[in-house]
Amino acid sequence: MVQMWEENNRMASTTMIETVTITRPLKVIALICGLLVIILMVLGLASADWLMAAGWRQGLFMHCIDPEAPTPLPFDITAQPGCYAARPAPYIKAAAGLCVATLAADVCGALLTGLGLRSADHRTKFRYYRFAVLAMSLALMCILIALVIYPVCFAAELNLGNRSVWEFGWAYGVGWGAAIFLFGAVVLLLCDKESEELYYKERKVSQPLNYHTHA
Image 1 (cartoon, rainbow, N blue to C red):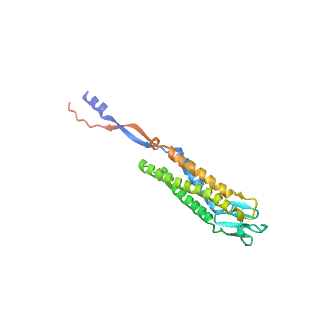
Image 2: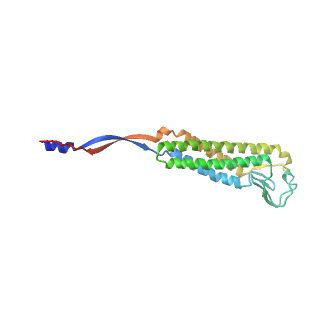
Image 3: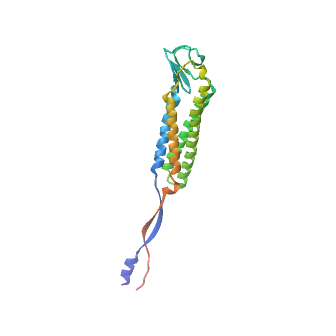
């Protein structure tokens, strides 16, 4: 009888509490938004299609003159058809610098978000997310300022444009697209609460017990 008691109690169970980290899909979507912003900003910075008129295209780093452009050219420029470095207007330089800052800050934000998704330690993970929000918020602020000052300051020199019709090109629209994705990334990172990523689970573990019983 003593032997049967030993066999029934040789294995005893203890309860352990495990911390389980769940990757929330909203942060994955925020990372995708950050990556899309990188693509959009590269396209916007490389294009000359921010402002367009008859025979004239103007971007942040260059302006282009079409072969059949009517004269006089905008802003009293004398040049042959082709693409040239952007005019040294202060608002163009400021908008270009802000867009470069947007790209750099967004790259940092996307990288930090990716590191947060890969991290196994929840404290480190949340620290990455916190800095990612700050970086993407800075990027959003820079692109919004650039998108506002570019048309406002251009309107001040419109009388030198020598064109009756001006329109914003697709590259300027790409800038607004980048701003929308940045706003979405910031909101997704802020709305996904840190506490929702931590779950506590009970698990029973059987452990052998050593009893020495004398009959």
